[in-house]
Image (tube, rainbow, N blue to C red; front, side, top):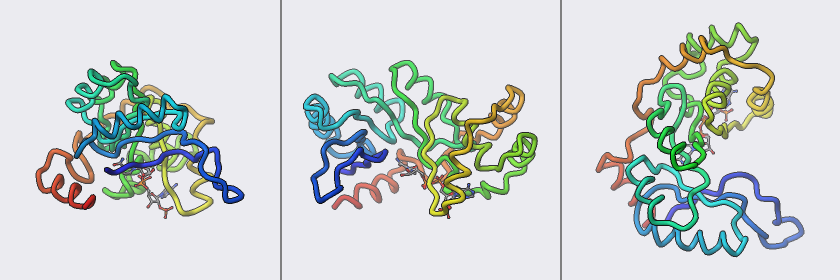
Length: 202
Ligand SMILES: NC(=O)c1ccc[n+]([C@@H]2O[C@H](COP(=O)([O-])OP(=O)(O)OC[C@H]3O[C@@H](n4cnc5c(N)ncnc54)[C@H](OP(=O)(O)O)[C@@H]3O)[C@@H](O)[C@H]2O)c1
């Protein structure tokens, strides 16, 4: 079973104390005994050990199935989401079931020459913002939670500084046109990928 712990826990590892609780725990992908995993998470949620439970890489088919057979609905679903893979159809399903859409890899991990994209550059310049800030702002205005990663302090500051501007509907539409509707990484429905990912757990 693969878990990803998201968000800093309010913590706990100070002074050698054990972790008191986890803010959000989610299943990384719908492989192996994910129902068994989810039921264990529900039990921990009910005991207050985990404040919110969720899933990741659950595309509409798996997500709908899960929603119909669990007691606690997932709070979030983290799926690959960025300007080149906007996940509009999946977003609507999440909305229907009251699940918050969270982006995995909001910059497509820098693939596709992300930070040099001419459309994002031009739009960003109008607001005196970088490509990264424009891309994050687009997702935020699309009701998608973003957790960008950077190892550089100045970029972390830059990535946090996205709440003081608003993209116009025209600019939102222009960025919507960048959607290629396919993964920049891999498909969770590709047999070779599934073999590779399930192999990681052995
Ligand atoms: N559930 C899933 O399957 C899944 C899949 C992918 C990602 N995720 C999650 O999504 C989050 C972020 O994903 P990620 O790290 O894979 O990719 P990402 O956030 O899309 O991209 C990170 C890359 O962007 C660069 N970067 C960050 N801010 C920048 C800026 N302002 N200007 C220029 N470059 C910038 C970083 O470089 P530096 O570090 O050198 O600054 C790094 O190379 C993580 O929490 C991750 O666990 C989840």
